Image (tube, rainbow, N blue to C red; front, side, top):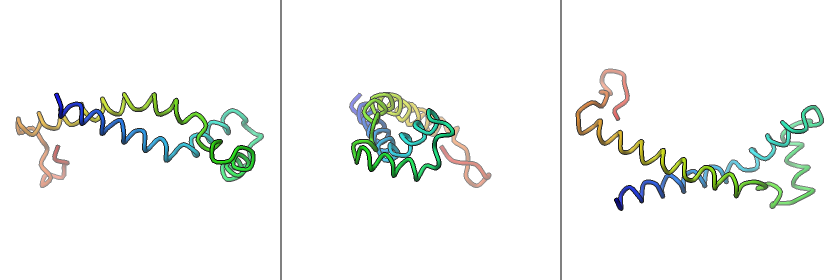
Length: 103
């Protein structure tokens, strides 16, 4: 049980870190989808947001994104590790020598 909690936590943290690092690009892509033809480029939108709202504007909506991604990534990581362990225990992993990945 403790190992499962660690895996869920690790997956959740990884999801939060990845979302946070990509937050400015996510924000710009969302703005560009909403504004359509009014946008010139991603660089222009990043610059416009930085000038208007500063660092805070770059991470607009990141809290909600993290709340959404943490449980799903934690669960995904736990299931992945569990299935990998079962496959290896039952010797069902694929062999690297046969041009496949080993689970």
